[in-house]
Length: 322
Ligand code: FAD
Image (tube, rainbow, N blue to C red):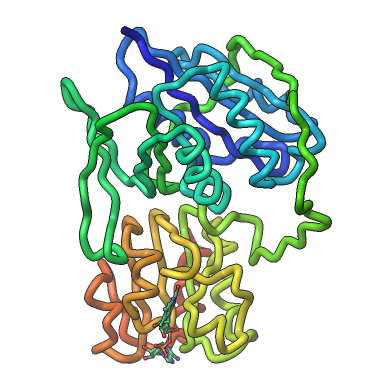
């Protein structure tokens, strides 16, 4: 019997987020020939977004457009998603392991008595089962799980699953009216963006992160320059955030953001386990630290023992030549 997987797509600034394309790929890995993938896009004035998705595996895109869905709000989004779950009757629901996905997924799971596997970085499709791997114990170990019942809910860590090719195409788009606007107990009045640059830290392919070794707000400037040149984003350790060298929105780690870039450049970061929990899955880790015994070198692919205020500008100059 064929099954349906529903992907909850996220968007910002009028574009689908990269993690949404990765979630579609995750859904594809969970399906076989004859199965269906449905996409749910919730928001306000977002009808055009549906045109930015195209893949032969997608049967239908649900678009739910309503002012109550303009900003993420668990109350309105849960109501909207549950309405779409009724329509789609999926066996599985896939979301990004993002701030929204982490909030929404458990509520959706609880509403549908569904099992949930979170923060998945690898999906293996075997003949009769699909296996999901996720890091545990702050990235020190991995566990592989499978669902034993339906429905199920899956969240995937950004930047780990390949993405579907982005092309325009025609897929059946079904506009669904948000039928039961509820009286929201809390609403968002204002969103103040506090990002270090143009690239979203959690989706950046290159992250240049600074720690307490950066020593001041001013000290982050060479890191920002390098990140801008490489088209990346600046991140930070909690040490740097606590010292007020940068905003907490940049914090990476157990109690901050989890990032999985292609390249992670750690500048003046000692490599405490709580920091490593947020970046250990980066594809290539480059550490710059003046202490050759700093723990960060144990997980680094490349290490530079030196003063970051000398090394980072040198790297920037070198990359300018490329
Ligand atoms: P430090 O440990 O002080 O390291 C600074 C490094 O900079 C040193 O290795 C030093 O050799 C190097 N250095 C100094 N000057 C230079 C220079 N000029 N050039 C090159 N290198 C230089 N931390 C996080 O990052 N993220 C989290 O999410 C997080 N969550 C936590 C949760 C809990 C419950 C707890 C208890 C702690 C958490 N921490 C977290 C804090 C964590 O334990 C560390 O204290 C923190 O990561 C240290 O930050 P740091 O590496 O920047 O600073």
